[in-house]
Length: 316
Length: 276
Ligand SMILES: Cc1ncc(C[n+]2csc(CCOP(=O)(O)OP(=O)(O)O)c2C)c(N)n1
Ligand SMILES: [Mg+2]
Image (cartoon, rainbow over all chains, first blue to last red):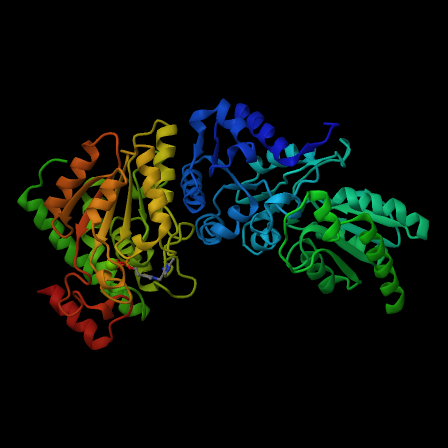
C-alpha cells in the first residue's frame, strides 16, 4: 500500500478478506454499494450481503437483529445517512443494546466534494461519540483502514468507522503498530502538539516539519480512535508541550477538538486551538478547493500552531 | 397447530385472569405505566408463550429458540407478567417495575431482563430487528420462528413500511407479525389521527400473507398462527382485533387508560372484577 487509495476502497477490499476468514461477517448497504465499495463483498458473498434499498432506518434495525442472533454486521452508506438520518435507530437498537454492529460510513467530511452540503457530514463524530457503548474510529489512510476493519471485527460491541471518498496518500508507515484506543505518536516535539485524525494527519505532519523554520518543535499524534480516547498519551503530550492544535475534517464542535478540549481542561489545562469546520454547512466544489476554502490547510495549521505557542507564553 | 380442547382453553382463561391481575398490580405499585396496551396484547402473548413458542426459561439463550420482539415496548408489563409466570425470573421482580435498580425497566431492556429478545420503546423499530433475526435463522439453517408484535398507532412510523418491504422481499415465512388492532393511540382513535384503512389491503399490497382474527379468542389465534406457520414464501401478518384495556370494564376502549396507573380505589375495583 504505497500508492494513493481512498479509505472506502481499502474498506471494500478489507471486507472481502474478512469475509473469507470469518463466516459470521454479513454486510448491509442502502443502495450505495458501488460507492461504499461493499459491492466487492456482495460479488463474492451474495448470500451474506443484504441490499436494504433506500431504507437506512430499516437497515440499522435489521443489522441489530442479525447481531442479536450472532452475526457481525457491517453496515454502510454515506456519513449523513449512516448517522443523523438513523440516529434513534442507532441509539436505541444498537448502542443501548450493545449490539455487535459496525457502522462504516464512507463519504464523510468536506472531501465528499461536488455533491455539496446535503451530503457532507461534519457532525457524525459528535453524534456517535456521545452515545454510550459506541467506539469511534477514523483511519488515516488505506493501510490503517484495513487494520481498523480487522480490529472492528474483533472488537465486541458497536463501532463507528469513518471513511472518506477521495484517494489519500499513505501517511502511516507500516512499522507503527495499530491498536484500537491507542493514539500514534508520529513525530516527537517539545513546544507544541498537533493532534489530528483521518486525512488531516498528513496535513499535520507537513505543518510540523515546516514549523522548524519558526523554531517551534511540534509533535504530531494520530488519534485514529476518538472514543475511547488515549488519555494517557494525550495528557503526557499536553504536559510536555503545553500547547495543542487539533485538526479534523469535521465541525470544531463535538468532534476531535471537542474531545481533546474536554480532556485537557479537566486534567491539564493548556491552550487548545481547534482547526476544522467552523460551525457551518459545506458546499459544492472539488475536495482540494473545499479543503482550501474551509481552512484545512498546512498554512492554516502553521498559524494556529504559532498562536497556540503564543498563548502558552502569555499564560505563564 | 392442533385444535385446542375445551379444558385447555379454560386453563388459558384462568391463566389470563391471574396475569391480568399481575399487570394491574405491577402498574398500580409502580405508580405509572401503560395498562391499556398491556391488556390488549396479553392474550396474544399467552397463546404464544403457553401454546406455541419453543422456548425454555432455564435455557433462554438457546440458539434455536423461537424469538419474540415486542415492538410496542410500552406494553412490557404484560410480557413481564408472562415471563415471570414462565420462570424466566422470580415473580418478586414484578413489584420492582419502573423502580430504581430494577431489572424490569419502564420499557424492555434485553440487557437487564432475562427473556427479553430486544430492547424496545422507541416505536417503529421492532419489525426491522425481527427481520434481522429471521434472516439470521435462514443463514444459520436454524428452524426457529420469529414473532413480532406491533401497535396500530405504531405502524404510522415509516420504518415499519421499510421493514414490511424487507420481510416480503426476502420471503420471510419464518416470521409472523401481529398487529394489536385496538383502535386507539395516545391522542385519540387511530381513524381520527391518521386513517389506517385499508389496513389488511396495505399489508397485502406490501406482499404479506394477511389474516384477521379476534385477538382475545385463543382458538382463533392458535388457528391463525398454525396457518401462518404453514404458509410458505411470504411473511404473515395477523391483524388481531383487540380491545384496549381488555378485561377491566372501566378501562376498556378508554383513551385515558393508555398511560396512567390506577389509584387505590380503581385498583381494588379492577381486582374485584378480575376475581369474579
Ligand atoms: C418513536 C416514538 N414516538 C412516540 C412514542 C410515544 N408513544 C408511546 S405509546 C404511543 C402510542 C402507540 O399507540 P399504539 O401503537 O396503538 O399502542 P397501543 O394502543 O397498543 O398502546 C406513543 C405515541 C414512542 N414511544 N416512540
Ligand atoms: Mg393502539
